[in-house]
Image (cartoon, rainbow, N blue to C red; front, side, top):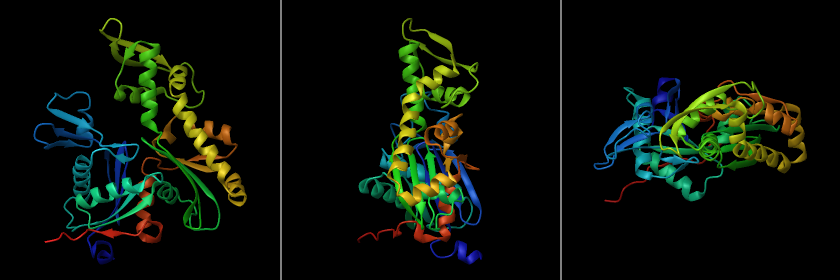
Length: 345
């Protein structure tokens, strides 16, 4: 058993390289890393100062010589070199002291990625130390992780609301029969809160503060209307620091546009489904995963809009990585692997 797991190119890893967080699954052990997809770089020397949790604490608090950044946006690489360094750190940390040489990596990608974007993330993973890389659509990985019967001739629907993208798909016979990928997720909700505070309250707040507010009292459906939370920022009129309390209805109104886009993506996917698969989904309902699944009332909003039974996955934040890890046992579910290219002498 040990030789099957750690033989050949080394161990096998599944990586959910998300806009918000990176989750790594090690074959034979399960989830071994869950950290923010953030890296802090010395702007003058390009040296890596911190990655993950430590780097996230630096966002918005660094001097001009240090840049704390998220090198992915909407699940797509915005800075190749920085993404490579961050990914290398995560892979090495996940492996730890295990003697693994050039591990095989299954990487989760949004189904809406272009060929150029897929090549970029593939090359970045190879450059980060992988010996072989296979890509798997996030929606398929999410369905596997949610224990849906993806290999059977029956339609199963999954909705994965991540930080930068929302993946909607109906699976059948080991593939994605209908899929929809939109570049809207948790960060668009944060941005919407920032804009609301700026235009309605004349208060300039950061994305991190907006995210805290979203987690505390954000919702997609009317909940406890007396909920409120404090947000801090700079008064755009006086220029001074100010604290302001926002209520749950205001935050829900602020996030209305991105939430509506997600709901419309789910409805559009259902409209494109063949009659037989649509009937299966009507009977079985859909499974909701990703960080957006934790937004209060998101399941009820989708239930009201679609008429479907909506279930939140048991582990929505790690579901995709677990599914990609389980696909290591079924390589046909991922794309054809490509090994590291030999360098010409």
